[in-house]
Image (cartoon, rainbow, N blue to C red; front, side, top):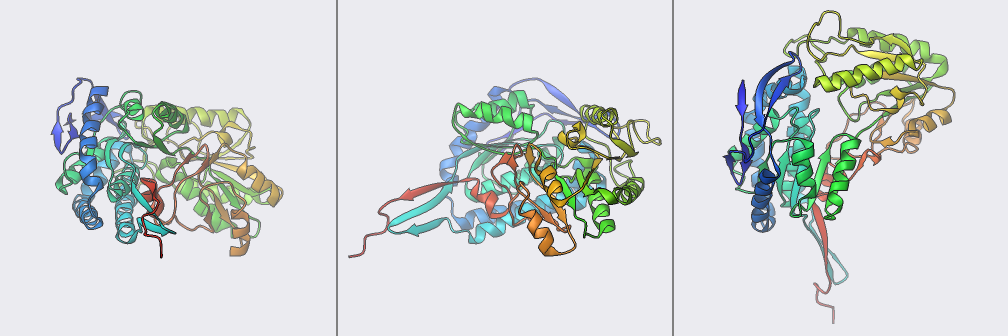
Length: 478
């Protein structure tokens, strides 16, 4: 049993003020393999005080100093790359190869991207006789999720360091070991005391304390829409900035002139990837009604080819979902799909037959799904694909937009012009056109109840900057 019973405050590992602990469960075995301390309001107060004290000096560091700092963090991150892959695989069940090639790689990608942005970003702009300058927002509180732990930690910590902010991180208590390892990386990289602090704990205690703290200037939260609403309400009394990356129910519109086989194959694999535990997963596949049976056959084959099993096995495609809570929720939603009349064409309730323990979900596909069904409305966060037939392109666009979410979306057509036209009509923060991957230099974030603010690239940096106008900064011309 690994013991991780300290927090990182003011450049040192310190004992918690409280005494409560939590076992960390490996979702592949359902057994505890580590134990962490759970923080209290007093622990948060101590960490915030350290960040507040460090802010004046760090906020005035030069671009060159912050570039060197990020380069040092990146160098240590690379050195501990494989260790990070194993930590993520153990804590949230990602297959080791996927953990290495996607999960850990995403973190390195974001750190590298913000480093390049920082090297050339224009913090100052002269308008008439006014200097408009962009300055660090202040002390930040970060609340990060378990599904893409390094992706989300680096999306916040990287640009905050680049901007000159100080911070307190609360990793997910469900999958905290990668966050602890990242903190070791920060320490080894020589980040000065107080700039980065970490307190483990749960949302109602540590998350709430960060959200309400009067000395926190900004909260950046990634997680469910339900929890995001709670964070925003808690932050309102102190009028702090709140940036949120929340849930999604992403439509995947496959148009009549698309290469159906290629589009369905890519869409189903993307839906099942990471055991379906991605907020931007293409979970609603909208297809021409007269081709639904063809689509079902292709998608069903992908489900059957998806190998569910031990994350440490080289043949595994997807591992378990992260916890019993998530497993039970997903099982309930699969049962709801059956009860509401959707046609089950692959998977279904229960574990795969060859597995008798672990939080494993059968890759599941429903057809004849209507957009008013529970499985089309709620974020399932598991390997469950809903196929929705449409009769016209207008209907497809209307159904795609008929959701409280607006994070990501996908459009595939026979020509780029056709796909572009439909993409412009989708109410979402992102659209993947004809299978294009994400771009770390572009903006990541959503419309509607999928959140506010943007991450990635220069957009992520700007989320951590305040805008100041200095009138009369330039002497008036004579």
